[in-house]
Image (tube, rainbow, N blue to C red; front, side):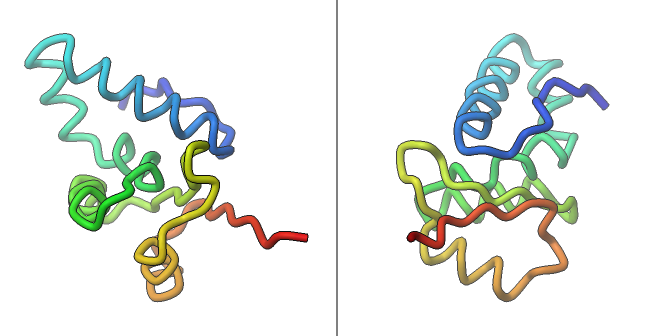
Length: 102
């Protein structure tokens, strides 16, 4: 496995993770194949998906790996579909960050 994600799970690092992954898969076919084969890459950025299709695609690529649900900094909150998924699949969560307000 290639480890290139920071350990923190704040919303800034999630955005950085997704940008790094996109950069990695655009280098060459071999890098893309390696990234697609490693579920942990995708499990770490599931929270960036804003559409239902994007979320489903990232979950599929993450396969059974524990996922990280952290809202991207642009949204500052998870979507309702992501919240519903988290509530119904607590066993899949490696990290969940939510803002409960003040």
